[in-house]
Image (cartoon, rainbow, N blue to C red; front, top):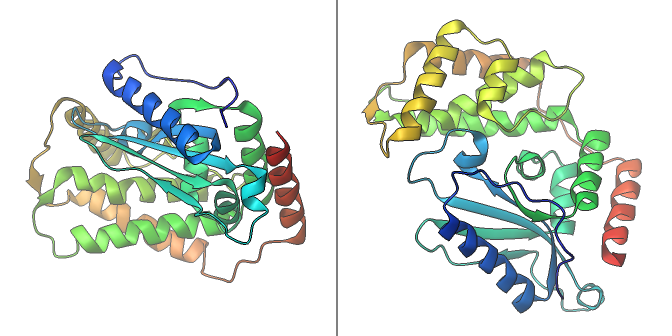
Length: 275
């Protein structure tokens, strides 16, 4: 099954032509060998988040739909397709049904894929339909708790003992903290921007946080290693304060997917199978 001609493609001019060709070839092989249609293939990770290094991996993630006969079988195929990590290229994807269920549960990863500014291929109706589901039915508190759990895990893993750490790991906690601040200050929105500089610009953090954040981005863009050091106090305080504010603003509670959400998701899923 071949994918329809892609109407979505947005590749930065600085991308390696060789790596771009490698990703395109890997996606074409997946379509051919697994008999799937790829609805959306994007770049995730630091390149899409706005703080790449010269040696950042190419992290392609994609959403796919299987053939109708594969769904109408007692022997269901896996809901992921994984390919070997080669050099600096990592290409893996999720089946549409898996992505929809995670999205409605408040999984921010799926939503970030839909928001990625770097698109290898995709159909507008596929991405727009999933974004419509996210905007209509995503629980913003569940999204916030996703970022909170992610950020606290990174904070406790790398920075708990106040020792010197690889400075590039600061982004692992700083970006979730900034996304949480953005969500807290934009009560009408459920989806925060994926791009970290945009988050900084739109959530009015302390001046020292903005300065240090941009300094780290600029240094990371030109060097493979930022070196190591303790977590700078302004960033430490910002991260801890935002996590504390998020725990108060977005308390843990059971999340139930509404019948309206299930109905709309099922209708979209069936429409993609028909297409």
